[in-house]
Length: 77
Length: 170
Image (cartoon, rainbow over all chains, first blue to last red):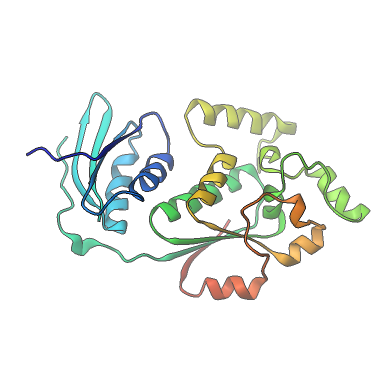
């Protein structure tokens, strides 16, 4: 199943807390149910995205890693 | 790498409030003040930063060299230049070489500077509140300070705000 991605956010190279802060800013204007794809290289982003989704209620649909790039699919609550 | 998708929404933790009492004006403490403030707001927490004592100096405009109304207040600003771009390190300051190296390292590792984080905090709706008493003590006027700040308040207002909040003193 492929999830329709409303937008992609590239935060590769950026360090804590920017991947989460920029994702939060990008998600704000999105409609509920829409999905954002986030690409990051900060290894700390893996636990942080899981924690952020738990706290905000947004859904972490998918989390993959390829060549040091983490890809998160987050569905807005 | 396969991840467990967070299917169950029952895990959802309700939003909380975050209050940061920003007391220090050291670069290595202002940084976490700003990191935690932006992160709290990004997590949907109602976030307030109360700037008091040395913490207030990081809210002074960077091009403002001397603040204060009398010679004692001016002397403080003279010895400890206000402004987010002029902060010193709590340790290994080495007459400014330490902060310069730290900012250089941060740039290399794409860590946002405290000034950039402060701007993000404003954009994210973090309430930045100066302490009225310290403003009077140090002779700081609203014109000396950056835009986007809330009305100066006292300790009672801050502790009232902190009643149902996670509170950090940095």
